[in-house]
Image (cartoon, rainbow, N blue to C red; front, top):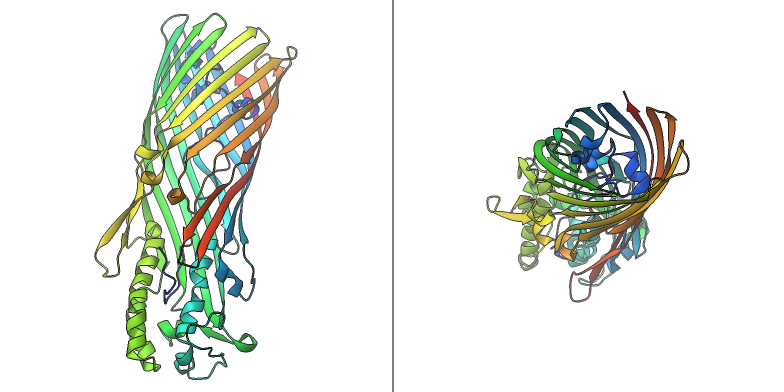
Length: 520
């Protein structure tokens, strides 16, 4: 928890790039255009089944089958924060305030391949199993500004002594100690995140008889991420816009001594065992697939710059400026708290605190039922369960003494795993044209403690539609569009007896795709 009396400001500039797709916390499930136009493919039999129903692919005709898919995704993340101290931001003195991040993935590719011979089906799939774009917040985030906004309390507490900190009087007004509003604040902030989880799976299905088939395989995951951002130029603002840089308290000889800057790369790899089963009887089809948990460690490499070490000297700097001993004793606990807050905020991406972070991909169970009342019509329903609470995701952060470490396990803050329900139908208008539409509901087990504006999800409903055109007897083209209607997740944090910090999280998402299926 950030203490209002923090004497130094910090913020973590990092965020997962938007996964502008359907699925769980770390899993993309829209890996074929057939899903985008129908939203429910767990019980379908087709080349897209290499991902959705691999056991069912064994019921396809002998020969080679290939699917090439390209998607384009747009997403906006919006967090509306309300915090009374935002009114003292001289650049934008308003609250509540919206912080908006934009993500765009121009090309999201995926490829499915199967070779069927007699009872066997040998399969491979390449796709972005997670991630899928970049996201940037041009003005940082509300959680960052909340910390910076507390500068008003510090400025007023030290008001009678601030002029002595600079060799030249900055003409900053000195209101009575404890009086609110004597100082405004200003700062510059930016953040950008990029996250890609590449997945390559191979496996084989075996058709036991005309009704039953099974599958076994494995997916390799390679994760590559980058997080860059900063909080710079933090300053008190007094009469006539005159500024007193915070760096003069930290190290008067270093104008960047209060800045925080992060540029970190993360890489890691893991393996996902996969099993599946499919059962056909008459006009019905039933399927199940289970993907085991993927153990993934993300290695941090990069540069992190913070004022934590220089905070050890801030007491001497203030004493030299004439701040009385009793005042220094009063703010000393806040200085220690500030060091811990900075360490905790950057810990996940700081190579010094965490050489490796745990970032497991949760186990996934999918179930599907398909029914074809007439030859031209196929109706599917599906269910997904992501075991998020058992997928370790966490890091350590270093306390003020520089030695003791605390553990943060984010998965333990979830109420439960993610649940998804979907339904879809496709209809053959004629031998050349098939139209389809579908719906999917995604429900995360979120709690207030699990929400973080640096990387968040909210429950949603997605609607997709599209068409398939049979170009020849061995080639078809699919086009699809789906939109995700995100819900709102509101949280509230009691910062002090008189101050409350609230957040309202939501997103907006659109995906357009085209796919080419070839039999040869």
